[in-house]
Length: 419
Image (cartoon, rainbow, N blue to C red; front, side, top):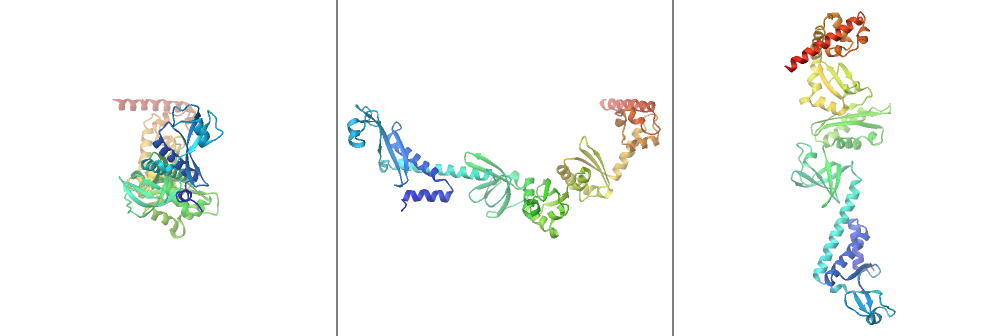
């Protein structure tokens, strides 16, 4: 039959998920502290757990001496041979088992505090080890309480915190309500592990789609990019290597069931699902959905695009307070300048007029240069004579003159701005 202490060690280890050796070490340390409180810090003491007896045994070690000057650390040869070891010799270190019942109430209380603290520390270490490897997961819990705007979440064996900065604007929770979040970070602080959760992180949206869309968790569909304005609107870009799978359709689900589950979890956040394309102009056009795009001008060097949309689609492409184009920029990584057909025509007209300021350039020549992508005085000034003279009807002499004159006009414009 197990002794009371042995049963306690087994039960505590089981209930709190702590290794028995940690509890035994705590008990041994506690008994050592209790013994030192009674006998003094200079005494040589050892505590060890006797599993068979089911008790913590404390031994006081003393050196065998012919002449004793300190009874706490020394024992006479006569006493040693009589009480401890009949073969004892001077210089031997002999241990005597102490009666732990004599340690006193204060010493025992101190021992209890040490045990409680050691067990708490072990629990914290266990929680940290468990959760540090779960970073990037979605976790479920219940709202436990609120602290300074932060939501404290009961995760079972641990508590998580959703800071105000990681909460979705206008979301309101009550105590005891179920809550799901993204495990953002695990910090080790003096009070124990701090598990930081987020509902605004783009990876939270990604994780929700992984739960709802089996093709994503199975690796058949990739989420390439996510852009979010939490609580308002999000865009995700998806692709697949399997030609038989429609990645957008799979994410939307039958009658929108899959995307609606995500929208409900995010309490009404609008979600656009965009097909990814290696053709970056096509990708940007998709990212600007639901707006339709007429044409795109791409500048690879600066990763910028000018997107021309029908006049009635401009406000849709830009979105409320610029939200649609802003999310498209985040999603694709391209700088996007959206213009309506009317704006583009006015800009083209302005470009034509500026080219005609260069002596020798007629309306027809300006049209030809414009169609070749040379749409401003700056592009002419930066051009090589050979490039311009390759155009029909333009010789090198005329090309060199245009470049020179364009340079002068630019200089004049710069001087005006500096005045």
